[in-house]
Length: 335
Ligand code: A3P
Image 1: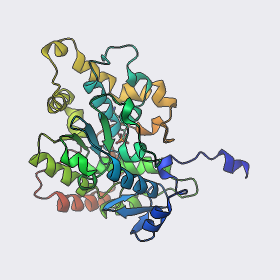
Image 2 (image 1 turned 120 degrees about the horizontal axis):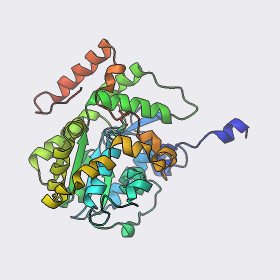
Image 3 (image 1 turned 90 degrees about the vertical axis):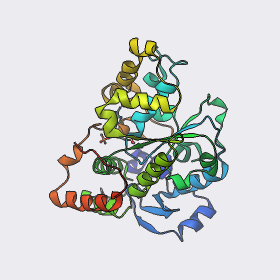
Image 4 (image 1 turned 45 degrees about the vertical axis):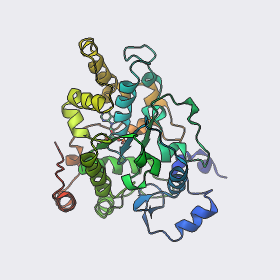
């Protein structure tokens, strides 16, 4: 092995393309595939575009995960602000056990992804049966899976789902940056135009983006007690109102006393981009999946797409957005 080979960091576990089960290899050989955002290829399994190792984990998760009525699962399209909402959710739900003013609050020493793990990207990734005994109740979990692909017990139980959506233009830009930073070392950087073409065709990480959003939107309208639909831009604009909505949905509303003592403000401060992105753990730490924590903090702004999109790109994506969301009642904020 040469020196340059030994110094190359290993890709995150969920992107490693070797060591797949024979069953998974067989399945991959018949699945539709496209150029990968991060790895060599991305495959379509049950309507979701994702990487081989994740497909293996999705199957295990669907077969094994038993939801409990008290579970809370955060679902997002990748790069919609998952890290942020994980931090808000964790501090909100655990505020009795971990008062937000506490000196050694878990968010000060752990990345939000370590506090609320992904089912398919973490817990079921290694082919082991996850050990849930260390989880306190309610269990806080997360997923990028579309509604129809969630394990059946999630749909059949009283498990609550919190869905976070971000406008597609910023989601795309964030995904393009993220995937280029993680892109496997033997592959070239993907151009923005090429990836926008794929995004518009629905070929994005855990995409298509539209189906993902629309399915949860529909569920949130039909089952408002089961699914809460939040928007990144609305949390940015009215953080207090949105976090109170979240607390009420989860049946742990803030008391007047908490509000007067500044608990809500402190949760928002603790979870702000400025605070989280500057913590030592998020500057120098790594997740067990191998991804550096700093990868989850780039700009954290609404409207960064304007720094990248040409008029042609805007028109192209607008056209798809209009087509896909027409009549849904969903509107995105872009500024
Ligand atoms: P940008 O790339 O636009 O900066 P995810 O957590 O789903 O991977 O999404 C990552 C996006 O959320 C990144 O967007 C990141 O900067 C942003 N983000 C991370 N923490 C945030 C926070 N506390 N507040 C607002 N945005 C945040």
